Image (cartoon, rainbow, N blue to C red; front, side, top):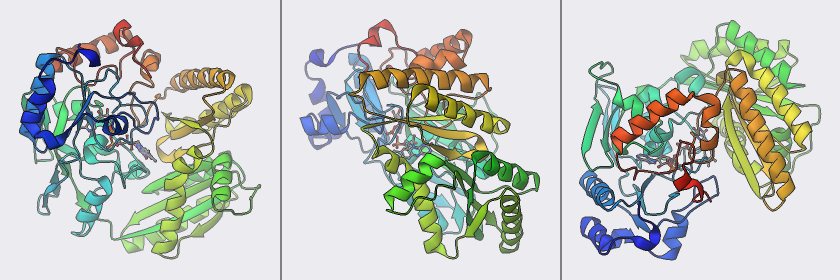
Length: 472
Ligand SMILES: Cc1cc2nc3c(=O)[nH]c(=O)nc-3n(C[C@H](O)[C@H](O)[C@H](O)COP(=O)(O)OP(=O)(O)OC[C@H]3O[C@@H](n4cnc5c(N)ncnc54)[C@H](O)[C@@H]3O)c2cc1C
């Protein structure tokens, strides 16, 4: 692979001839801006290219492949594992100009979109037509469908509705060698050949560049109710969750915040501390108006039986307020320390209490703030280690804490990532969860898609010697 100092002569000009000089950037400001994501550990690309259509993406890929220049696709750059960071320099291909909703087909219940349609914009557009696109990462006002597909993004509604992969019917994608492929299609059933659609979903931009997505939609639930319950302990909150699920309620969202998160939100609002509250559940039920009344009653019963104090949002403003506390939490926590290391570990639902016991132990042993919250219905908890990178000793403790967290999660039959992917920040831990045979097969798949290894090098797989010194 060529390095930044050895870009072939005429390479920049060849990109300009594909997309036009206005859409090729080599200035420092652009290289800085397109070299980072939400992980906050970046690496500048040499060139930023902004194609406007699939044929341009294909020609850029071909040019990079022929010249062995690294190529990294970028959506909105909200990823948490450094997926969009061009570890080896080269070209960042930003899909921001490919941001159109091509079609919403109300009869077939599907939407066809370009990759950089903002998730919330798609949701708003389909809801106007009485339809629903459920995946709702907390970043939905910024993240885009291509990035969601590449990471298989989830969100609070995954408990009832599943994650992005459940809604991807088909893809148009550009291989790193420049060929355009189409996978899946418009029908909800399709068992012809290997399921390449689902292989590409969650492949973190390492196999192909997604240029068009066919998404399944469902009818919009006509009514919803949002409730917030406070509890004296995590275990009582989990007891309430167990009771409501056993009682037949499948909430559209079931979010848990621990005491540290609650305190952070209270401080953010300048509110008084409610020290007796150790856990908050945010619960949303949706469906037919009559069924949500019944489900709301069952939720209330489950919470009060576990000593929960429950309040229901009386209108949309109140609902938005409850949800904005949850959606803002990530950014509120980030403001508390120079660095927030965010891990989205997941365990089988029956083991969430064990996971919180592990987190409590790690906080004490490693003397680190670790506010935790997440999608309790899925067993998917965001464990945030707040740290000052300038404090080398604390950083060492954090590294031990994170390795131990991953080991214990795997021992609980869980996974080191439920939503955010591996990127480069978790690549060194892949072997904790996957066998060497599985990793070897994945490497062979990567090789089949990307024989020259130009697409998003350094991601998912443990570092090779070649990449070792590239990690920022
Ligand atoms: C405040 C905040 C809250 C978040 N909450 C959630 C959450 O609730 N759930 C969740 O799952 N995630 C969450 N995230 C993480 C992030 O938003 C998701 O991973 C999201 O899917 C990334 O989308 P993006 O458009 O920003 O992708 P980027 O960060 O730009 O890219 C992510 C990866 O996708 C690849 N990629 C991007 N576009 C394409 C394409 N067209 N073709 C091929 N590969 C591509 C990139 O190469 C990279 O590997 C959150 C992040 C933030 C900052």
